[in-house]
Amino acid sequence: MHSLIIHMSSSTARRPNAERLRDLLPGAELIEAVDGRDAARVPDVEPLTGTLHRPHYPFPLRPAEIGVFESHRRCWRRIVESGWDYALITEDDLRVDSARLDRALALIRDHANPEMYIRLPVKQREKPVETLARDGDMQFVLPRVIGLQCICQVVGRGAATRLLAATDRIDRPVDTLLQMHWVTDQPVHTILGAGNAEIAGQIGGSTIQTKTRASGKLAREFKRALYRMQVALRPQAF
Image (cartoon, rainbow, N blue to C red; front, top):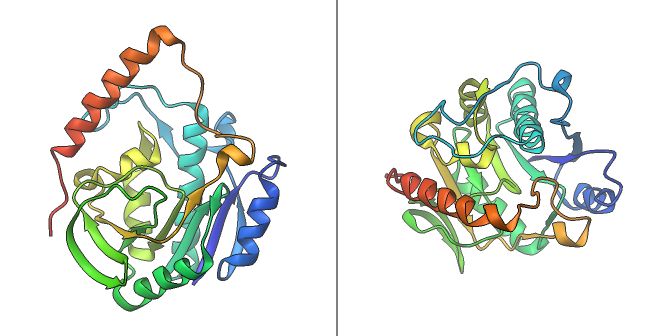
């Protein structure tokens, strides 16, 4: 198994954790994150307003979200060009439980294939419609509704090829687009109980979230809830 850790070298607060992950994860290397504020760094992607796919996305893409999306595309491209069957892709604010991660990767080795995209989320919210395998309290599942965040996942070569083809134009964040299996033609599986945690708050905070004035928070939360309801109407099925 190869591991790709997305990290912006100018982010000194996150560097120690990125290096810790490089030491812990199998076959790991750091992948330079893309700065979405620099249009020259994302020449092969056309960012659009949120009307490219249905349901329409109600918020404009932020430069940081464009950078995160292209950073993941950079990793997908690396998988395809290297001819790897899979790679573990993480962001640099991940904390792993090494013993549980080893169990999760063993489940993947035994039951996955290179066509799969498999999340190892920090939040255990997804409800399965199919369970592929178990290891004690850990489950390898196909979730009904795909969860958000891309902090840790194993991506197969076939999945990477499919996702690159589907994302030459983008109109929403990468985790939001990945929920749209009817657009990408890519099912997304999940390992529940992998023991991962997000530690952005301990190493400088989120690189994506921005402050919203109180007057706009209610309207934003209403739009977000309405959008998520529309996504939930398109569940995965086996």
